[in-house]
Length: 546
Image (cartoon, rainbow, N blue to C red):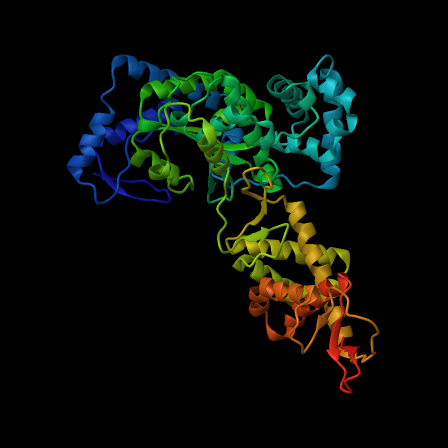
């Protein structure tokens, strides 16, 4: 008989009738879809290979079978503890088709007030109370508190408990002196940074959520505290993106074959405690393994996390191929298995620092908008954004504030729908690209509209000006540009530098808007105190030409 998996990647596999029946029996008994299908293969795989793969996978010892059933029972128990509506809700969250909470001002304010009430009841003698005494503004900042509410689906009581755990963990890992400071890459020592290599990013799933990869086989630390400090930093970096706060992340713990845990599960309890203290909304958690012993380790995690989160967990037991196809059914693209170096000892040295920063790297693509501090980016995504602003700036300028907000949001949505992101350079010791918070993006786009209006006014005034022709006395100033003469001045060198720097941007614009680049160059020269001079027609000296 033929059975067809109705997921994104659908492939035909040959199975026996009793195997199909056992699938449905297992599903009926556990009332869970976890671990139902034993193998998933490509169409070109032969029938004999499929049977061989299927039987080899199911050659488990009695002890392994017992461990697997124990984990399945724990998962099933947690799943069955939820109401039908809550199960359905968690399934929708896992697959990214859930309805997001509308963040209206009245709703947020009410949640913040409720959060305050719970904090008053719980804070006595806590690290949170210590931080509050040191700087009440830091712990009561609105954006900081909203981050915790988002991470806990606006459950004020749970958010308050997590805030207390957050400061306890932060104090334990970094000391009291860092309680009121954001942890940066500079706060990690060489051993901490080396521990970053097993934590990596893998773009986004089909619902636009960040995919957070963990490779247990790459764990290599001198002290467990190094790894916990690295994890704290990594996850707080993710939360700098407001989009990540709202959509959450999908975590993949990948311990298949050569990526099996190199430390035999050391520190799993402490790792879970740190993860539960950080307000990252985990929309899905996938554990991939090829060994039942790895599978059994998850039983510990099940006992520590809330039932809702357990319901958003899936365990995939099998080879690389099998696990990749299981993940693909949840909208997670193929993992970069062949590009990852397996490290079984502490790397140390400069190589560790390099690899630790690269694990946080987002590779920009042509559709991304890149925000840089020193110059305008010539990335195609930036050109597309500038053209949108040029097209809509007059409508934006003449509209009320509500219309302006709609236009800005529309432009942001166009960039996203075109496959682009808004990326900012981290500015760290080892710079990398991170996604910009949505409010920061809106502010920057609105500023582009204001800059465009100013550029248009300057260009208009330039067109109405007539050459002054006023004679000057004395020698030219250092930043004057003397037209029609070959001598070099600092002003002429600056002009040549500006033309070279902005030539690509100038060429990319249409004829009607190239004047904005010219005006910007002229204003830069004038800002240095320079003038544009030309020889007088009567040979009486130099006259102001602009």
